[in-house]
Length: 270
Ligand code: HEM
Image 1 (cartoon, rainbow, N blue to C red):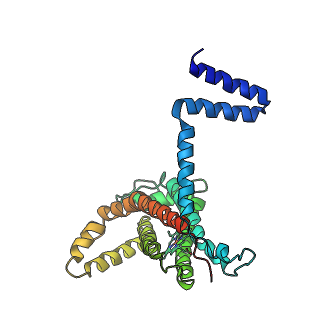
Image 2 (tube, rainbow, N blue to C red):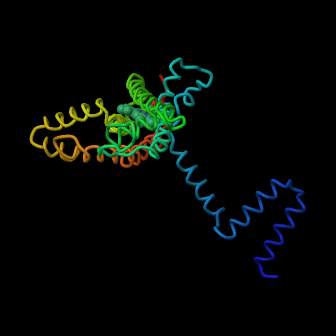
Image 3 (cartoon, rainbow, N blue to C red):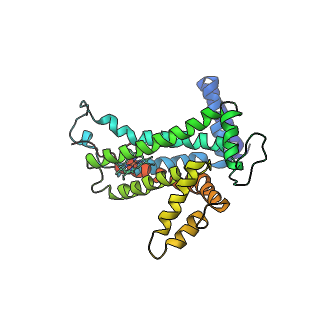
């Protein structure tokens, strides 16, 4: 018998001897099968080593350092605001992805019967009136987006008033400033997508604000809005920012932001 076959034979014999339950047997069999082909045990050990090394670098939390295990800090609920922002973001992302199946970013005149407006506007009308639970899907998306904006703002206040922005957490504070700015850009680009009166005039204000920037104003308006008056180029830019660029960038930044909190430990109340 070859060495490998002998190994396999020994493993199976060991499993029979131990009188394992069918679930345990299934688990071990799968593990051994996968390990033979992909060396997963080596990689799992590598990950485990990495995990312990990273955790060794974690500073002791205030609670651990001063043995305050039994204390309840009355402002602890405010520490949930960051996670609350994350949950609202995930809900908005999922409902937004579903809305994407029905929305069309086009300013062309719609040919749909009973809708004398643009394709974009009429696709939202279809979601609201014809699609089963479409009004609910859109409301979930709008509400989660607004809840996220409010939660992110309140989270920032919590961080400020507990002094959690101080050394060594300055970088995460700056990353937070980028995140709250991008959250607002998310809101603005989404607000323009229905291409209704609110969207159109909000877009107009955006163009005027860009144009008011000294020296580079015209260039900024051209870049962000595709020109000085609103049209297809504007809607297309808002759409691609809202459904493609921002989701990638914001998801990555949130992951880094939370990763830094994990590495540094939470700044607990004093
Ligand atoms: C998309 C937006 C954001 C998300 C999803 C998010 C998420 C989180 C989460 C889950 C935590 C863990 C502690 C907690 O929940 O309070 C945290 C901590 C932190 N966040 Fe945010 N955050 C966001 C925006 C911001 C903003 C706008 C700022 C400030 C300008 C900020 C600065 C910080 C800092 C400094 C910490 C560490 C606080 C500590 O150690 O006590 N974050 N964030």
